[in-house]
Image (cartoon, rainbow, N blue to C red; front, side, top):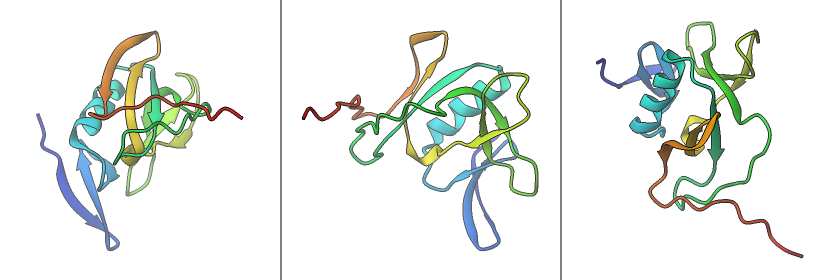
Length: 123
């Protein structure tokens, strides 16, 4: 298996794995899970949050889909709504605190060591 390497493009540092560029702060384990989901055509659900504390932001939109890749010189991972979609939004790989399979929420593919689910503030 290829190694994750550090590269620079136009003065900005990245991690690169199998031709896909990731934010330099993305944990290697997250990179490998995202690449495995892309290669296996696995629909995933992302949970974004504070990577220092592991506390979820409680995002509800644009967190479910298949992993694709942008075009251009710096190819970044995208979250594609379904297999027929032509594009999607960039994945904030450096803010991921949990990844689960869409069809089996109990199947955790990655979880921050200090993961804390979102707790809405009660008024």
